[in-house]
Amino acid sequence: MIPYGTVAEAEAALGRGLTWAEATWFRYSAAMPDHWLLWHNTLILFLAHVLVPLPLALLERLAPAFAMRYKLQLARGAALPGCRCPLLQGHRPRLPARPRSLPVHLLPRRKGLSLSSYT
Image 1 (cartoon, helix red, strand yellow):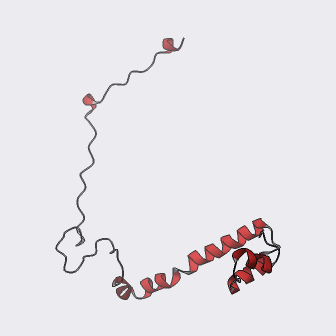
Image 2: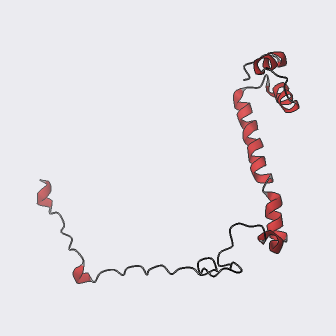
Image 3: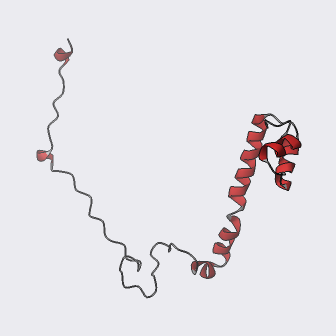
């Protein structure tokens, strides 16, 4: 809940007039319980995080050549024009091979516990 009962109290506490968005939100949420406001804010943030990146995603999908000119990170394996560095020309360094398991005669032997050790 908002700690101010009226718009005049909120303006006095801020020392300025409320903006259009602040006044609208104040009128909308003044008498609303906190848990309802939580769900409203969650919905607003979810929609913002879903809808804001859509134009960029559509641009990358519909015009990839245009979008690639402005990308800072290249796609995997893409070559950087005019660069002689093999790491930046799509060459991926080879990782060392996984170590093979040791032959059976070099593995440590497991010694089981006998039942007599529990008594």
